[in-house]
Length: 98
Image 1 (tube, one colour):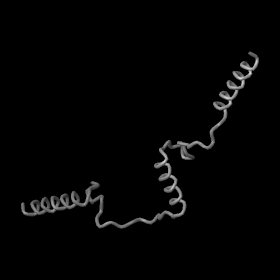
Image 2 (cartoon, one colour; image 1 turned 90 degrees about the vertical axis):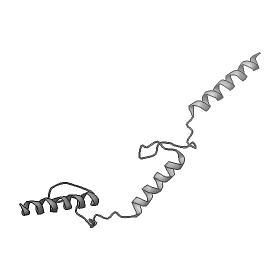
Image 3 (cartoon, rainbow, N blue to C red; image 1 turned 180 degrees about the vertical axis):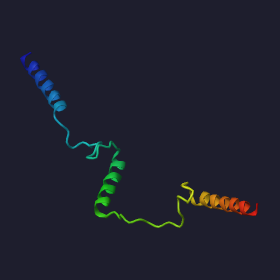
């Protein structure tokens, strides 16, 4: 009977030790950046972080083929900017004809 109690105590101690020890070999879903992600996404985030550290960012301004904000102060896509320009030319033409 005494050996059964020792076995129960040893088993309970082992179970308690298993739950109280930290599992450092387990996967950490939350990285240093505080984002919880799956292993696949975590790998992509880590690669992006490494690439950003290696590749310097350019602070230069890229030139585009159009001005997003025209003289009218409206920001528009290239297609809409062209439509607005045509409308403005038509209106100025009609005003000069009158």
